[in-house]
Length: 280
Image 1 (cartoon, helix red, strand yellow):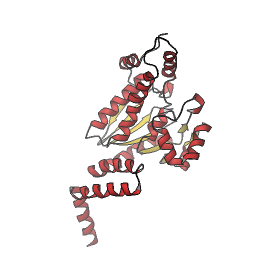
Image 2: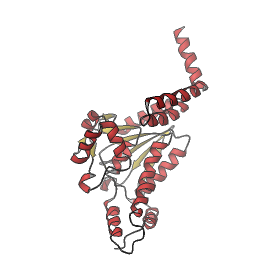
Image 3: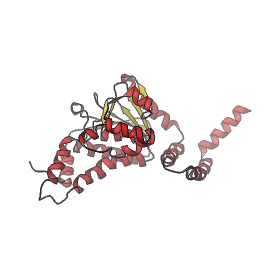
Image 4: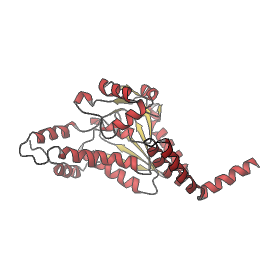
């Protein structure tokens, strides 16, 4: 079997005509769903491309201020497609291969990394509604989101070590900041499946809900987010994301510069007048 180059993988991704990612728009937000349930929504080349393209469209749309990402039962997303990984191994063993490790690097950076950067760097709020097993890049997808709501059926599967891989696509950054080095190390080397309730106790997700209520709860969060003044949501996300990597003084200075901008907005002025009226 011919091992595919990055360009050939992307050509095959564009040729996949199945609808692997659906988008349902609501007032001010959208629900994005991965649709390959028989494979637990594994990120094939086709699904990966569709997910990146749908996210590009939604995060560029000023009318969409929040996005909920979920999977089609029974899984959320079980990571990268093992067939693509096998293809990479075959190419690396082929003496005629010219790309070397830069082939998989391109897919990881431009596709997987492209998705994660869209979530993290856009001003659009992203809610991960984890409905079942989440592994590998699927975990990175959830961890990159601004809020993680999990079904009682959700399971986090840090399977990197068993495959001889390392935490990927931002996972090492997230998990060490949530757990500290030693607990993050334990998380990686144990490969233990972590059910939703325990993940909540560990502090790596925001809340757990009954399975049937999961998407409704994600919608509630989206509706709450878009109910905020437009500037407040758009400015708070980058401020809080950057603050986690700043010193106290740097974060304080950034807040000092950002806060006066809010004073110039109509929602802030109306809010102040409303509170003063209540006191009177």
